[in-house]
Image (cartoon, rainbow, N blue to C red; front, side, top):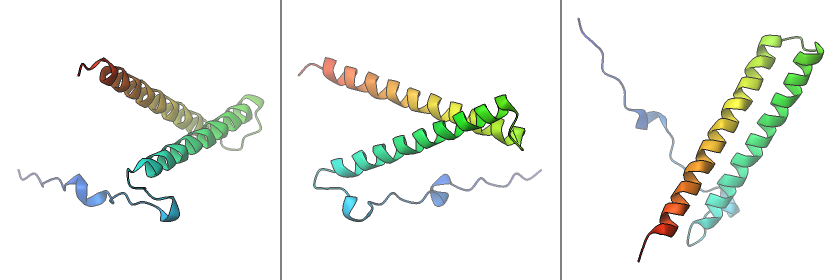
Length: 101
């Protein structure tokens, strides 16, 4: 039995690049701030979409209940991921603050 090799994941992931005038300054703070703001805006849009879908399911006005449930679950998973990232970032900051110099 021959098992084919798995292709490396690096080949399918494009490198991150700064976007136009909003790109990184000398310290790189601007691009991180813009990336964070963009991610939070996407999270907010996802949550609004999930809320709309859940209202449509509850009122029975949706034409595609399966799609609405998937939308609600995607919103839930995105919120859980955002909360986990926030918790990890908070733990990292607390650990840095407790480091003795």
